[in-house]
Amino acid sequence: MSSISTDGAASAPFSVVGREPVGRFAPSPTGPLHLGSLLAAVGSYLDARHHGGRWLVRMEDLDTPRVVPGCADDMLRTLETYGFEWDGEVLHQSTRREAYEAAIHRLSEAGRTFACSCSRRELAHPGGDDAPGYPGTCRGGVPRPGPTSLRFRVNDSPIHFDDVFQGAQDFDLAACGDVVIRRRDGIVSYQLAVVVDDAYQQVTRVIRGADLLASTAWQIDLQSALGSPHPIYGHLPLVVEAGGVKLSKSRRAVPVDRAQVAQGLTTTLTLLSQTPPADLGRATIKDVWKWAFAHWRPQALAGRSQVSCPPGATEQQNSLGKL
Image 1 (cartoon, rainbow, N blue to C red):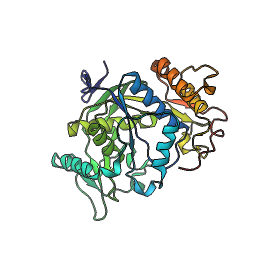
Image 2 (tube, one colour):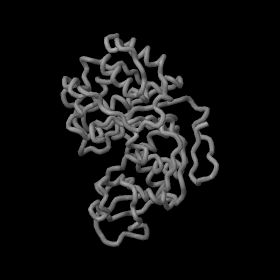
Image 3 (cartoon, rainbow, N blue to C red):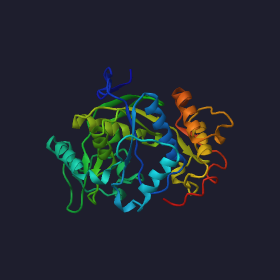
Image 4 (spheres, rainbow, N blue to C red):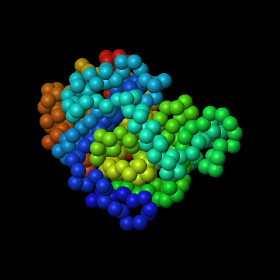
């Protein structure tokens, strides 16, 4: 049984066991839906349907300075073109600010937050607010006046969970450090919002890219602090360029092609270590999904954290335009 532990002792069952399986795809509308995000969508969709569950779409549009106007709607049209059928209404995080502030209030009342005046330059964190290793500079109080972020005070205990694809995972929360949950500009961070929304939408299966694996320990600790269920986690391999550069950070991360849907889905299935027949790329979209549902083999992804972008795959996908 999948399990989770926050004290290094014997793992307890997930609190979502026995609930209806619910998966989700939660892109940020800050750029085009590229091959890497399509892989995450296909993987989470197949996982949810394989378990007889619902599949939701959520737009993580809190970082308003980076949101591209019209991107969310275009993303949804692309998903529809690719044959995805989500359940219920699309949730936009920009409509949920009161819920996030309520969660921050609960954490603050419990003594789990503190103001932090440290800048990124002072911390020398190239990863920004989500970089691990915060040294606790402001845990005892802010040393100077000025703008502050708000950090979540983590428990100094180990986190263990079994990842669907990556296997047993262990994290030292003390080494991870206290994470920002509200930025200096007042925007609530991804780490808090995703926990609040997964609980609100009763998500039981979080299937996403392996770049978010390290965030899971913070999210499990936040779930515990808020009394929220712990979902089952599965982290899919990242699509990378030569040299290991994540595709979304590459200049070649062009939008997926709406004109070659069956081929795009077949390429994605191959990247997910599935073995579609050679002629599946010429089938109808309905038949591609029919094959994928019938032949989904999640065990083929065991231990795979990266897959190489196939030659020519990005150049083929130039017809969508920027979202």
